[in-house]
Length: 188
Image 1 (cartoon, rainbow, N blue to C red):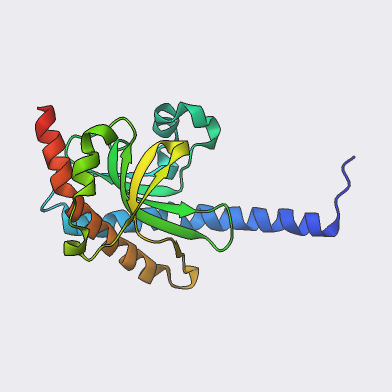
Image 2: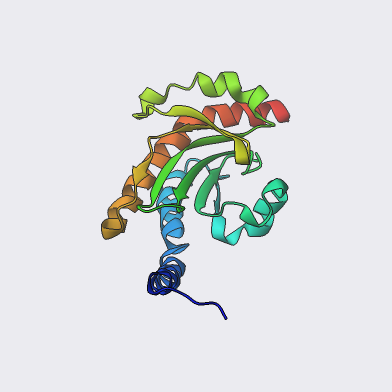
């Protein structure tokens, strides 16, 4: 028989209650961001593609087989034209492994496309769209990213977070659209 200390029982209780909260709040949180972004961008970018991580486990595992069951799903992504969403997108990633929960967002380019898009992505005039991202490489998912600073998610005001995140996604999308258009045109 497994004996548990009171603190371990309380930890398990916290986990179960937290999971119930997570299941209630997400993916609705991601859906709301997607709706806000689509409302603004769809008229100008009719081929905008949106995907929500928790609903895309099979596709994520196929794209990142080396991660298996550990494939990250705490995200919403916005794709361009006919480019595979995983290869080139604006992504919002929640960092759920520690408390407080944090997030970042920005342009994500998978490793296979990077040699073709590195120059164009590096030349984007981010400032024109009120952005000042930092370049990072996320090795586990093989993504090159231009991202905003990491921010703490304010659970006490998720409506304001949705508005803030949506606005930033729209800015990143508009700034990155010429790179995507050029790549899509080269592939034809």
